[in-house]
Length: 127
Image 1: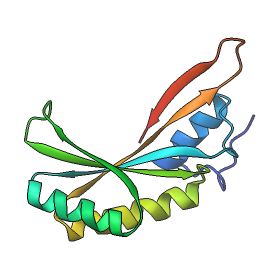
Image 2: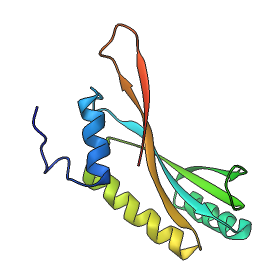
Image 3: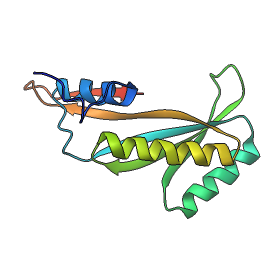
Image 4: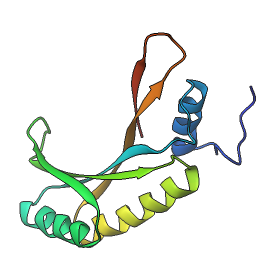
């Protein structure tokens, strides 16, 4: 099968989506995609989390104790079909929000459900 570069451009997002597609993941089905923003300051992460909640985003917040620096992570959960343009748009929006609150956008990931086998398989994809 040849890659459609309109649907799966040659960059990190396109490569992850292409890999998901090749692995048999149905990209026409909605997935819960997790976007992450990292912070070094607890007050800033709290302000950003409140802002995202006011924007009606589903989030979680935790302190990453395994990080070299004291780091707080906000994960934003978006239930959507994993389409390239939508992911890029959300990345740009979350990057802008991260910058406004002194954080850094840290990528996205999602669980992919592949049913090629009689046994159900579950894989994680991260960008």
